[in-house]
Amino acid sequence: MTIDEIRQSFYSLQQSIHGNKPLVYLDNAATTQTLQPALDALIAYYHQGNANVHRATHTLATNATHALEETRKAVQQFIHAKESTEIIFTSGTTASINLVANSYGAAYIQPGDEILISEMEHHSNIVPWQLACERKGAHLAVIPINDQGELIMEEFEKRLKPRTKIVALTQVSNNLGTINPIAEIVQKAHAVGAVVLVDAAQAVAHMPIDVQQLDCDFLIFSSHKMYAPTGVGVLYGKRALLEQLPPYQVGGGMIDQVTLPQSTYTGLPYKFEAGTPNTANIVALGAAIAWLQAIGWKYIMEYEQQLSAYAKQLLQDIKGLRLISTARDSVGILSFAIPTMHHLDIGLLLDAQGIAVRTGHGCTQPLMKRLGVDGIVRASIGIYNTEAEITYFVEQLARIIR
Ligand code: PMP
Image 1 (spheres, rainbow, N blue to C red):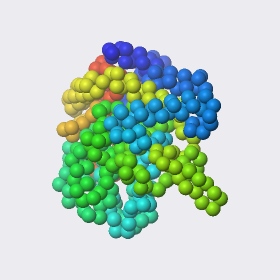
Image 2 (tube, protein in one colour):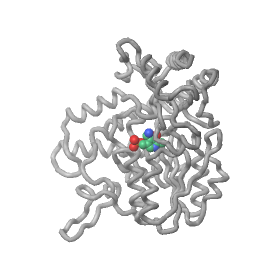
Image 3 (cartoon, protein in one colour):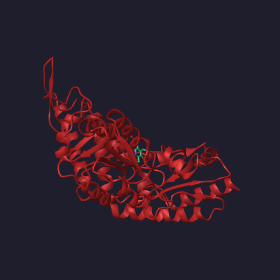
Image 4 (tube, rainbow, N blue to C red):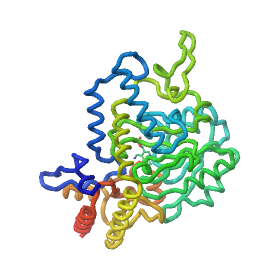
């Protein structure tokens, strides 16, 4: 597929902003634009007949159930899970982390235990653990980062203790772009008996994920950051672990027997899927996965790395710009600060030229504190961005600074 064909697959990219500025969308780390084949799958699902899954015997219900379960298998293959029962659908990364923090927290965290996160986590991978610690009298320990925006591995090792119960880390930082050495982290965490949760929200659209190779215990991501519609999240968990965990949300669809005094629950994955799932959007996620697989990781990674290197080089040449994304191993997330300007002003002035970037703390206030800034400007690359867009963005930025 050529870049033009890729761009044709995204209707929203064809628009102009403020009347005559062609949209340059560089806020992909927040949410990606939505792929037409995913939208086609969503509409086809409704056209063929909406029905509730896993319940009725009629044809529409059978078809809806089949479509949902086929997507579960597609997700299983996409992240190389051993079994499709290890794939749980939620409403997003945040919901998936809350599920684990509540369920695993309730079952396994004791007073005096430790939960280990890092200084670069998204708020969604901080706050649920703060609450889990509060509920259980546990302690939240934090791995610091170095000035390049990388985890300090010696500090990680120092913080691993027999009472470390869970290590919850991002695979890729949403504001630094840093790729963390997850396989090594998992191996070291397992050596002290801790389980590892991987927040793959920023990794899933940019690199292949193999949960068996990583040997992680939980891995989590959202549909809206991988060219699918909003509203769907995935929680992968090793079967043996998930089987031991109590349910988080309860209600229809996840029960075995209900009597008025008490209930028993059904098995995986339904034990963690109370209520009616977001079937249409789950089906659309399946279409986005098929599309990504058809393009192939080799192309995606090479193309995005090349664009990212080009953008970094241009940004580094701007006088007075402090580049924040400086890790050696990173994806196409380019954050920076201009000490003489407010990030919000830069965002508004770029928007006036049709350029969409993220400004502010980017849901990482502890990271902002570590960097000594109130906020940043973040340009994040997706599969449909072009070299011409990067050139235009940097030219406009340089003009605004001047
Ligand atoms: N973790 C990371 C690393 C993220 O980038 C995001 C989204 N910005 C989230 C968690 C939260 O994802 P969602 O809003 O889809 O729940």
